[in-house]
Length: 299
Image (cartoon, rainbow, N blue to C red; front, side, top):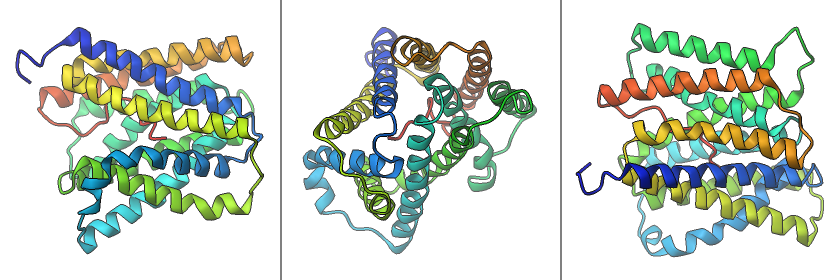
């Protein structure tokens, strides 16, 4: 990154916008309040979001994939499809703050899976950071001290599935253009969600469709803002700002959805965030880039 492109204030600003957009995604899904089944909500969100591929059509049209790239893209589509369903289901069952805090486990899962997929080596410091993050997850869930909801297990699955999707994206991004990677994911997930949505189909109202289109807009805006943040400043500058998503989720949940702030959730989320920050810092020092920059809300 050159001196001219290094603009930490701009990077922090765009990462704040990123967090607000992703919290907006979560809040709008929560607003549906289960009126539309999780699989159908996810399908309609992706179907409506295909409109954002129109500007990329020219670069997508000339795309030529090898059999290996097709297989990897299909595998990513399958894992992401199931992950999205789990995420929408979790949002209908558990508080926003818990969804946001547990979503921070995705970078931790990526670090673990990178050992097996990318032959990464784990130093003792990173192992301790992973253990701390998993301890933060236990602090949030508190098994044995409260009854766990199916939404909690769905969120654990979501983070794991998104981490698999991210690692596949890391592999194929070296071979395909960003537009092609985005298009392949959007189309494959839309197709993958279709049979699940058909099985539980409930005719949505126009207001429900408007909410889901808003989800698509916020998700697209969030990923675009994140790209601008990375272009303006290194990840070690922008990464700490991602913790604000947890703060905003607690506030939005308390104000708009009557979800009381749970100190255990906040504490566990901060432990996970601290672990992710440490792992990211170590990767920056070692000039590697495996761990995603924050919660992989690829919705």
